[in-house]
Amino acid sequence: MQETMKQDNFRLTLPVDFDEYDWHVKGYFIGANLEFGNVTYRINLYSPERLLQDIQAELQNSGVFVEQNIVVVRELRRKTVLDSVRAMVESGRIQALIGIPSESNS
Image 1 (cartoon, rainbow, N blue to C red):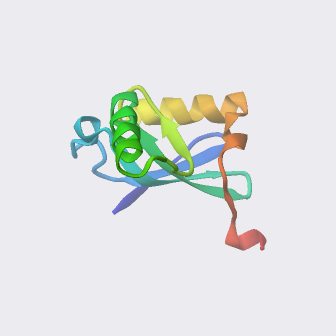
Image 2: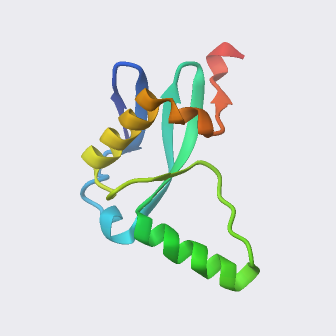
Image 3: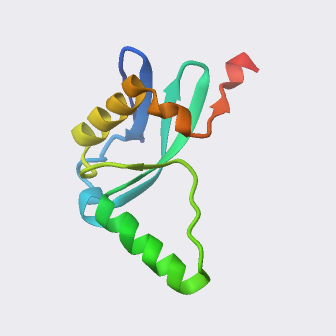
């Protein structure tokens, strides 16, 4: 089950039980939905430590690390993620993400 947190100028969708699962221990969450304007972004949330581990493992295995729409946050807890996304939107850094135009506007 998903929960959408509507803010003044964006909506972030995470599982309802996001804080009940140990995402903060796991260090990543793949596939959060962020809506801003007429665009939806599928973002991949990482802690700095977990991202470094994944990068090192991929470099060792294949020599390259590629992943779209990575957002690194201090920790994977709902409030921290929401505050980080808000800061990203307000600063304009959301423009670095690759989005999909919303269906209602195509």
